[in-house]
Image (tube, rainbow, N blue to C red; front, top):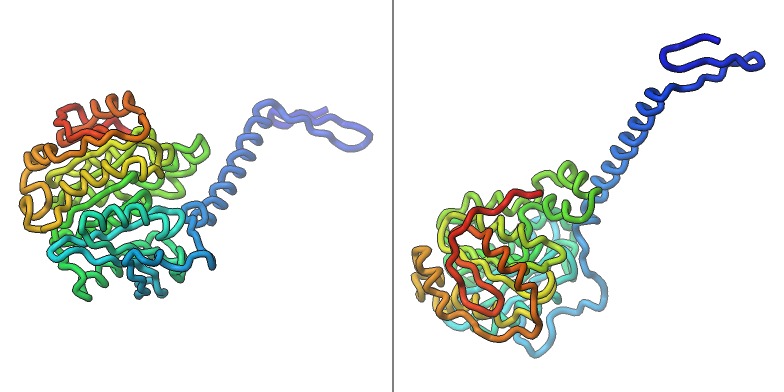
Length: 364
């Protein structure tokens, strides 16, 4: 019997059987687990677009509903394929909202928001990204940026709205192309609406268990970095909608976006229900939009709030006091309001409340 390192060789009938020591077994187990983790991360990286984008496609998508005055058109999406767009003209002198949906579904999922905007006399221009609905091509981070630019170009070049009369609204993943567009055209001082939006996609993914908490940052990196775009905005107003009970995008990420924006008046509107409960909060949306994007662009200093943060707080007098149809997580909202930096915080179904408190805690 001979000894080799920590392992031991046993001579049996003319051949050697090696018995590994505890340290070598541990090392091999660690290497095996590491190799498996690397392989899994490689597979996740290759499949990340499929994990991010969940488009609704198929023959059941036949365009906008009839009788609602929604014009359907197809425009060059900027990424080598045409994209589908729905357009509703506003009243004379009204602003136009560029609307960007989330990572799932299609334009049909935005009907509630389109109808709400239209009810205020505002114009709407909403798009389906490459690969969504009746649009062609494949979605990607860069494709979404190009699609957003295509929407801007179509609205401004065809005279549907002046650049300074555009409001940019992004829901969930749509907050990224919205923030991208606001930064790219910051000279137009466009109001920006972030509706249930994350800071970075990796931050949202980290909320879905230990695997994505570990794999999300190295795979996604700084992709879809909404918060990074907000840091460079200096003249626009910001309106954030988010529910403390959001089960898809944690409320703290919406708070962090709100805190990151230091360029002008801003308001954070707390919602009831979950990530997709627009109908439950319709009155809160309408009340905030009336303050944020008045029908006449010349009202309230041209941006709905006036030129100073004081305008944000004064606008609270016009807030909706409609009763919600369902009780939300009021305790969570109260607790969250304690973390909001200086600005305006609106509890569900109420007007803005002035708050002066410590900044947003870091990501866990």
